[in-house]
Image (cartoon, rainbow over all chains, first blue to last red; front, side):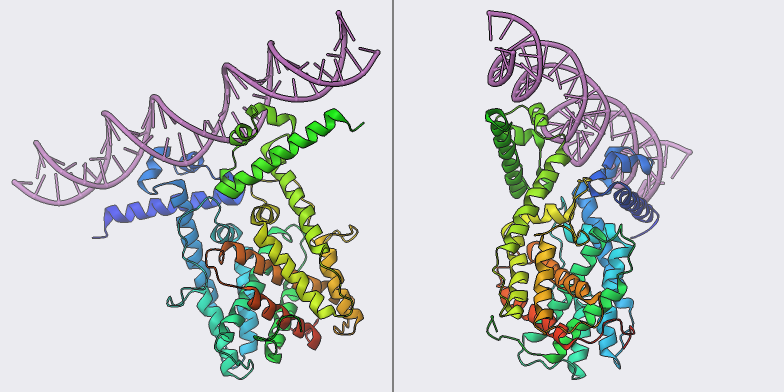
Amino acid sequence: MSSPRQRRKLRTRQAVMDAALAMVRENGPHGLSLRAVAKRVDYSPAALYEYFGSKDALIGALCNEGMQRFDAALRSVPVDEDNPQAYFVQIGLQYIAFAEANPEHFRLMFDRIGTNTELHLGPPKETEQDTFWMVMAEAVRLNIAAGHFKVKQPGEEKAITLGLWQLVHGMAILQITMFRATGEKMTDLHIYNLKTLYDGYVAGNHFASNPTE
Amino acid sequence: MSSPRQRRKLRTRQAVMDAALAMVRENGPHGLSLRAVAKRVDYSPAALYEYFGSKDALIGALCNEGMQRFDAALRSVPVDEDNPQAYFVQIGLQYIAFAEANPEHFRLMFDRIGTNTELHLGPPKETEQDTFWMVMAEAVRLNIAAGHFKVKQPGEEKAITLGLWQLVHGMAILQITMFRATGEKMTDLHIYNLKTLYDGYVAGNHFASNPTE
DNA sequence: GTATATTCTAAACACTGTTCGGAAATTGAT
DNA sequence: ATCAATTTCCGAACAGTGTTTAGAATATAC
């Protein structure tokens, strides 16, 4: 199996996805029209249904594509076992950089507009390797192993990873939705707040302490 | 001016907005149909154009409504000048609580799907009082005044406020998009990470320092 | 009571995603 | 090379969308 026919199918399938993504980039997620995509790749609207069962399925495919590239982007930053603090920061910066470089993919992935397809992303699936979550968890684990983070309870490692995720995700989203027009250089600020959160983990108070003090 | 006619107009206008919001809550942002909204309030589709210039304008009105309630929600937490740390955390929790309680409003406000109307939100407008940003800035300022945060450079106050915003926004968004199904209690984790970031600011290194160390 | 401004409707227009019947085109086997 | 079977594609149609327009109904003001 897997020959001339299937290769052509896979290629035009990719062409459809590329056209769709370009259309999202130009006209926003709202302006993604199957008919326009069809015209772009010289097909009849009905022909697309040979490659994607529905518009939502097409969007879902774009989400998965974005997710793969996202995971790869995070995996691409070299693990620096000798400097876990720098690795911690670099992972965060890479998260934000991907969002800035691929805002359409990023928003489709996390917004889930119109897609009811069961996206399997997020932290729960700890069995899956090489996901962006595992990369962040590794960054945390390195700092624990190096003695920089002193965890006292079993759940704390996951809590720290979650905190890192929440901060960089907020940075990424605000970056592409609010600060895109303003050409301000935000990287220094991101580094500042990433390091600050890092220092908080180094201090290491507060886990499972009483709320108001 | 401002009497029987205008009051009726304002009231049905609100009815339209309520119906629209309910429809977003039930069918998602994608499932907001003007015709369905019209049917819901016993009007013809064309009649809605007497109250909103377009669908985007209706969504924009919902955004503004959400923004007002959001600002009010943050302003409603009593400022605790004697315990700026608790205030810092409470503001963050309130931010998340609003997002969880009003996910439709929250997502419309920050997602901007389909709305090209110039939403005036975000931090830049520091002239405007009583916005959610000013509330967060006040929480930071109190900690500076109390001597908990030791700022060394003028821009640092804004950087801290931004960091708080990024963290709680990430928490809020991930909460309503990822952890809604899972009925896990996340509040303790939110408190933990908020306090951790807080400690980082107390430590107060890193501002305008060289990136990798 | 009549003129005026406001509010509402029905009908139409140009779109959208999707389905269906059938026509091309490609494949595999004789 | 011929023929049957599968895969691929298209035109047409259906139900739905936001929006516009002409005109009817209604409420206001004099």
